[in-house]
Amino acid sequence: MVSVDGLLDAHEVAVRARIEELRVQLADAERDLEHVVITRNTLQVVTKGAGVVRAVKAVKGAGSDQVPGAAVGPEPTVVPVRGEGMTEQALPAGYRSMWLAARSAGGGVRAGELARVLGLPATDTVREGLRSKLKRLVARGWAVEAGPGVFQMV
Image 1 (cartoon, rainbow, N blue to C red):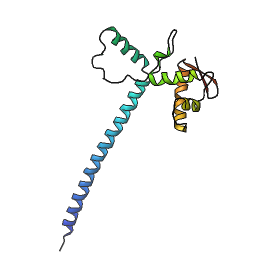
Image 2 (cartoon, rainbow, N blue to C red):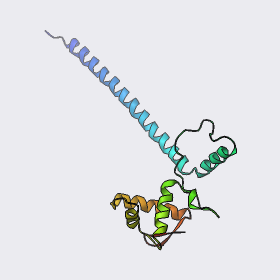
Image 3 (cartoon, rainbow, N blue to C red):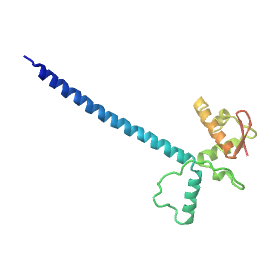
Image 4 (cartoon, rainbow, N blue to C red):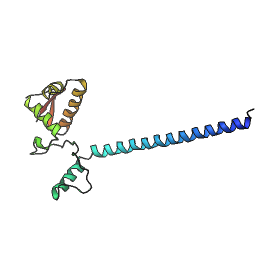
């Protein structure tokens, strides 16, 4: 015959095991949330950090080609604010090819037309991505929006 005390003991062990499992899951979720917060903060610093990139490039130019402790790999894609005398060579490679293609189109160009010129599929996603990049070029002085959705390189 099964005793009530035995049943309660077994139930207590099962509940304690479930509590421990939930504590582990909670700790994992809290760690994941902390990573999201760190990533968000890092992205804010990086996207606002055009000055930091210029400072790193200045340090690189001041001596060796490497900044001690700097990550090895491609430089961040930062579109610089266009200054006097700057050429398209100052643009990151992806933006440079887009800028040159739009400029060669003459007059104004729409994102969908630019997609075709670049050999990209004219999907909504591609058009929106190009439109976003074109607006970034406008904001940084590399282009003007001649009309709604019509961009002209300067």
